[in-house]
Length: 442
Ligand SMILES: Nc1ncnc2c1ncn2[C@@H]1O[C@H](COP(=O)(O)OP(=O)(O)OP(=O)(O)O)[C@@H](O)[C@H]1O
Image (tube, rainbow, N blue to C red):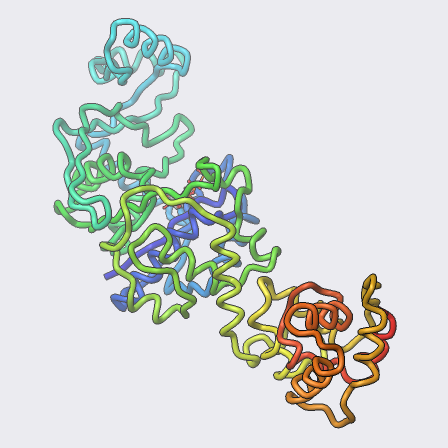
């Protein structure tokens, strides 16, 4: 069994692309199958080396590893052989119509209330007419003559699928400059590199019908591939994601501080019947099941991703974050704050609060209470029981309880309305800073 993820290096990977990469990688891990990363760079006008490198960086960040990788431009001679074979059998035929001529034909067919399909006029050309066109300096591009009938398959997500080939124009597989189109290159690669399962976006369903026809024309046995087409991911407004607009790119999310584990956990179960849970790759792979994925499109929701990020951070051990923490950070500090942060970058903020100088806000009407609080601070050494002892004494002294007791203390000690347990923070802030903040805020 072998799977592949095959992005085109025409922009930065977005969360929709990532959904496919993750589904492929989890399925491969679940079935102990090989996993290939193929860079579909036959569109040399739009493909860029920097994007291909960025794809590898993004996948590595997600924790996706591949057993083999190549670029389609490395296999041009293999596509040339397939082109020859299809020409020999008459499935590829030369065409000479210009874009303008094709547009006119389309318009005419629409006026005649016929579907705007290519009319195969060039199939009827005689060898003499062809020779004449070439003598006139015209260079042909090549279309694939689709079979009559339909291509059917049982899709692991979409169920029974059928693509009526007679409702599709014969696709161009070779441009006039001799370059091959993705539609053919992809089939040749899938056949020759032993791909068995193709998981990709729903945008490829029609392609699949065409590609099955091409594969069979190249000698593939029917049902050579098992397919799963996952619905497209939409943005929060229900719009389409595109690499071209750099929308919701993995790079941006990474720069914004999203944890790779949170993104993988979120995308692995988004639009499925399984509840999202912060899990490592292996447990996610174990439970991954294509039949749990819904046929309807799913919406990416930043709030849900942030909630997942929070859950991931709350369960991350110190050893996994130590090298990203401010110098000198302790495990006790991480354990105190990890359940209260949405993004890792907030750790530095809490480190400043607990180990550096801050200026707490002045609290109107609280001067007397905060001065008493400073006077009642327990003697050193401080421990995790200090908070309890101190606030019990302060409660008895002031007659306050609940929010009126705790809120002014939190604001004075941290400058924040909310945050980690003060019981844990207090020993880290220490007696000197605590006293100074209480008196500064009074
Ligand atoms: N919004 C989306 N949701 C889910 N999968 C998507 C989405 N957009 C693309 N894909 C899938 O991502 C994989 C990589 O495709 P590809 O590199 O062609 O991306 P693309 O975003 O469609 O590119 P482009 O915007 O350049 O056309 C394919 O399986 C494709 O079906």
